[in-house]
Length: 295
Image (cartoon, rainbow, N blue to C red; front, side, top):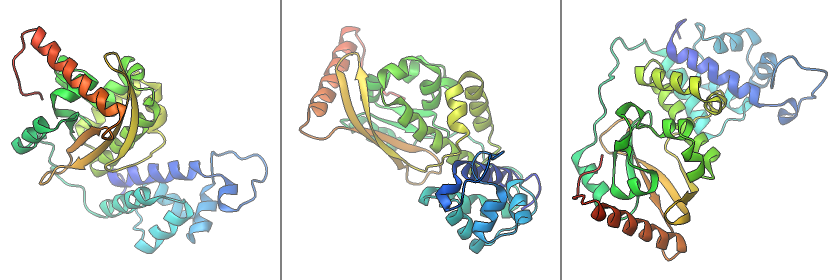
């Protein structure tokens, strides 16, 4: 790793956040007297991982160290990382061993035409999210559930912007905290892949300025790849509707994912989803709209 390497800095931040999460009793240590740091001390993690304190400190500082896979495995165990976190640790460390890319690809993300066709034959809400959770494409049912992304300026068509900057999102989604935590963890994974991406820097900076909740969740350094969950929506047209949501990587692309909301067949939620589709179609007919390609 080279001093100033963006992945080395991200690795150091991740290690500090994971260390702060642990308490002495979590790893079989006596709490002792009053502690000056949140979580474990550096020397305690180094001891648990079988590393020197100086070596571990240099890792947290993003300095010129090259941890072996064995050392990373020991750190993952000492920090009690889960599967996603362990992969994240290894990805950051291995990326930090490589020279910084001189000209990383920051081109516009594109949605394959075949994916747009798939969106519009889905009988359930679906949208395509870019690597930084920008909404790139959507179908009419997603619009009916979440609102029309086209009503927002392109720079604000982002799931995190909606969650953290629009108060209505908390009213629509009583499970807001859980969903927000998942999406922030997805963004953290994207930032780890390219820490200096201008879209990431702009989005994190904007949300950090406007939302204390985002600052709190971002500081956790939680990381997830493609995620899933279950969310209760309080929709003004159909009332409470509980939907499962899953993300799927698009074939042949790096970054964008397909996000799909589904209801268990034969349930009241599935019926409400059909009512939502009917209401949306009726509204479009009433205002004289013609079928259009959303997104």
